[in-house]
Amino acid sequence: MENHGSPNNPGTDEIDLRQLLQVIGKGFNNMFKAFLRLFLYLKRSILKLVILAVVGLLVGFGLNQIVTKRLKTEVIVKPNLESKNYLYDVVAEIQANVRARDTSFFGEMRIDVENLKGFEIDIAPVEDFDKKGNLDDDLKYLELLEKFRGDDIITDVVRTEILNKSALNHRITFYYKIEDKGKLISEKLLSYINSNAYFNELVAINRGNAEERIRQNQNLVEQIDGLVTKYSEKMSRDEPRGEGQIVLDDEEQLDIPGLLGLKNGLIRDIERKKIELQSHREAIRIINVGKTQEVQESFFGKNIVLIPSVLIILFILIDIIKFLNRKSKEMQLQ
Image: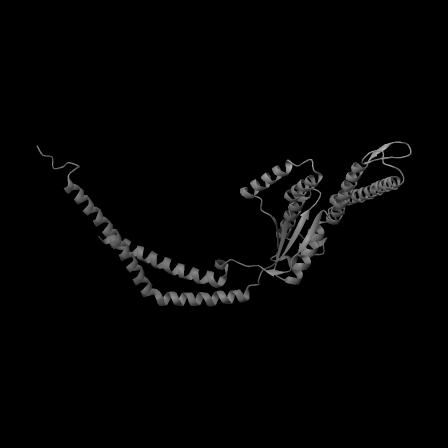
């Protein structure tokens, strides 16, 4: 007996395909109708939308002329002597006192709390080491340098790289409305940040140690130069006892290449200490104080764009609510 309902029947496949095409056609037809309704709605409401946009632009422009622009000063600093945590804590303390308008706190710095309206302070690291790709490249680079760790020059390079990665620079940003008063308050707060007695003592001790180290290294370099000079004079008078060695009156042999290597190491240490003296003048070293600049707001954050957008959105929402209310009443009547 022939089975007309078999899945392999070509007629059944043809009917399914026809139904699928009908469904797709209805979908495109509904999309076209929705687009047409939207077009008709915009056509009917275009005049109202244009009026709202013009009114919003005028109001936004007027507010931009009335509202005071926000200004800022960016200061790049470098914490020394493990003062990074202190730096972030003291910035948080200042910001908390700004919000509280603490007269006793700012009175010691001769800052009038009335001038703190709109004033803010923020801090963030300058470099971003969260990117895994950069971190992997740095680790591979240091691993390569590790193979040459016996070389003094490579050791200095590794030391410099580690210091560069661990001693980050940070950006302190001061926000304010009045330029003259804001800059003066910023300068006083920077002085307050560097007024910590504990870190000032550490800076003084560290600088004293560096200066003493430089003096001792310079004395050793002079002594080595004296020994090398004696060696040169003796070589000009007598035949050498051994290659690279000198025998003085007490017949004690000296290693001249070793002395020269020691001298180079002392000179490099003197150079590092001089840089340390220059960079460790304060616990929080101020690298650069930027000039006053206007805070650049995002495009949609400006009044001239925000207010027209809000008015148009409110108008469309009201029309949608009216449409839904009308449809609900029609359903109730049915």
